[in-house]
Length: 175
Ligand SMILES: [Zn+2]
Image 1 (cartoon, protein in one colour):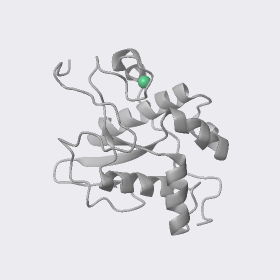
Image 2: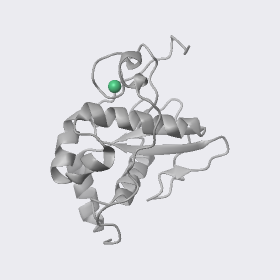
Image 3: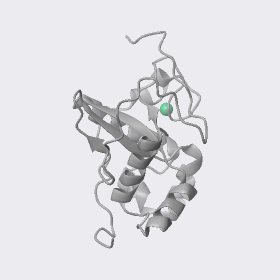
Image 4: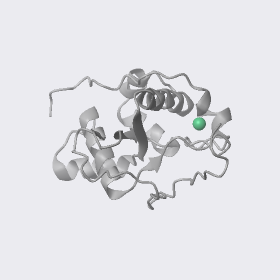
């Protein structure tokens, strides 16, 4: 299973990941995050990395209920299930790492509600346009995308496929 020569580059803060097989994401519309291409649908999914997860749930505590996750590990497993459910429909999901402060600033400049899922999706699409997204999945023997330091096959790869319940917001309609 898998290509043993395939390399997984860990994301470097502030720098774009290796985009050698980057799909054409320039046409991603804001607020959507997915676009039909000639080959398959690509999607940049908003993801709070480990060091940002605590900041995100401190600011928006209801996200833990929404995601069914109290810890970063539970969150990353749930997100993995979400990614798998995308892949099951022949979509190519990418991870768009969200830094809470940069995201808050981005929303403030545009007078957007940072709590709204649609604005997280819009920001994920913006990160995709900038090339600040990382490919998924890693090779089975490569470090897991979640940053645990474990091999992917011993970490999030064991999560069952299930869509993440992140479609509605308690304050939907306010923006
Ligand atoms: Zn993991």
